Length: 585
Ligand code: ATP
Ligand code: MG
Image (cartoon, rainbow, N blue to C red; front, side, top):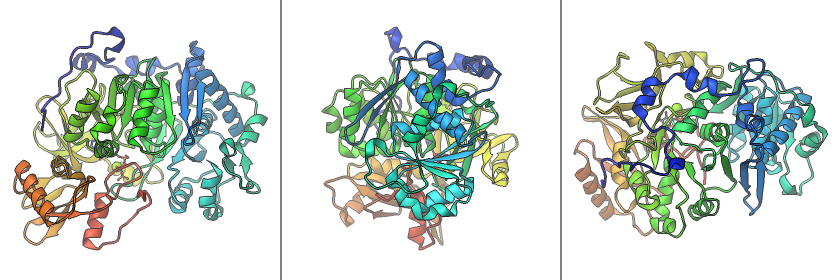
């Protein structure tokens, strides 16, 4: 590896100095109430509404003319919305919701591509007191049906093509009152389904000026997200308006948002990153957000960064690995000089990726860690802090994290164990929807158990080892798949690697790797031998894979995470379990 640590040089331009300049002193003096809760406006009657804080607050403070979003449609369209326009439109949709009887706690599903109307509807639902439940537009009928049934959906906001995809299952959702159709720019010529409601007609009939925001409190439910399904059936995680407090301040310190930033988040709102950091964090910080309707495209993304002078970019390891696969020379064809900060979440970020980023963007990619359940960033590499490639950084001010042994007692630095957090952070989930027992089982001896394994180094940096379910027990050693995967992808032929423990009569489990290759490399016994040797040189003999298989497609969730449980089930010929979130393209 090229670097053990990437140091930061002091920033001289005052406008670009990191918001969190001195981690240690800010952490030592941090107070949630004074430093975060009090920074929001709150509602006149003492309530809290996350959409108000994200949108209306800026208008109330005289920034209505500032751009909130620039939408880049998949057919080359562009639309711009100021905060004032965003407020107006979302008030209108709030009125639509109220006219349709949506009130506190009602679940409204949004099943749509990334259109401006998705964001307007989301903010309108929240202002009306409803709960948004966003879904990946790539979902087929079954995952949509399961989630709408589970959550008791009252309305569905969708587009004609997506409605057609799931039409047959809609009658199963007995709680569903109606479907609201967004036929953006008449993209669909199909006649509307009888009985459906038309978004634009509802909007023109509603009066935004007479809209009164619901009197939500910080304890009211706001967002429901199903987890990614990496380890099993996705769980419905319920979040409250209060989460916005932490989403705002993590945006400020962990993503370093400044008021003039142009921000690009590549996560889909079907995944929690797409709402916490694709809606709440950026807009509460008043930045201009790029909404890119298209999917992954190395040159498409670089062009957006170049043409719109993107300053902060938040993405995921899966995307970074695809960018690496596309090649550094593609980056070098674009002007990336506007970028000030790059962040990543969702999976461990391989050290190789951090270093690659440093080479091509002149800054490391900053890994940070959190989960659907935590609602916001918990541990991060901050712009002011040296980056240790492979580490997820240090806990956010106000957050206490620990590594526990099997008895749930805290361990000294250096040993790997169960990653846990002291409960009580503002964006903590309220519960798993209708699974209180599972929720309760996550708390032990005053800790919230994350389900991940990690260790802490002497300087308080956290190192992810693997999910508890994925850790491999081979000949008495516990091996985290991440370490093996990261070593393999350092080889020029390897694009991605997924590592599992394969049952073995002697060693209990042996390490088995599945790899996909970069263009121009040939699978075969010779490359397999070379990769084995390569891994053995980097890892101890007990940790290096005993078997390597070449595969064409790495099974991943819609949020881009490697599904090791599927690699394992396929290897062992076992049932695949819940595959509702499996990416199919
Ligand atoms: P499920 O809970 O349904 O199995 P999931 O855990 O992948 O799916 P998410 O809530 O989207 O669902 O993901 C959170 C998990 O992602 C974390 O618990 C961790 O395992 C992984 N993760 C997120 N960020 C990082 C990171 N920076 N480094 C390592 N792992 C990460
Ligand atoms: Mg999880």
